[in-house]
Length: 110
Image (cartoon, rainbow, N blue to C red):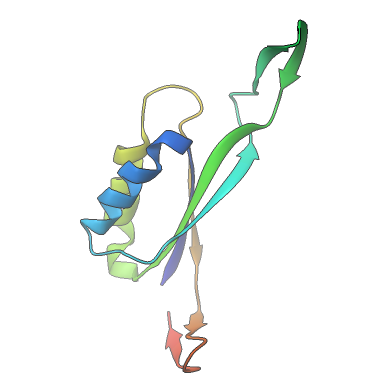
């Protein structure tokens, strides 16, 4: 099993969710986050004063998938989240050795 952690634009969450649903990947965690990469933020004006916004709003989408679905899931996320502009985000893949269902205590091995 792998944990796929994606940092994407907020307006791309539904497209990514739909793309993963088409692969029968239904369990996911979506979190509002802030950050920057090469995009480095932007300048904004508030009450007549200019200031730098260095941490931009992003969404983090996390899914755990079986090893045989990892490549398809990554491709689906990238295609759904891409605009072609700086700030589209990143995808990280992290090994999962095992997980537990809280209700039953049942263990799943990666």
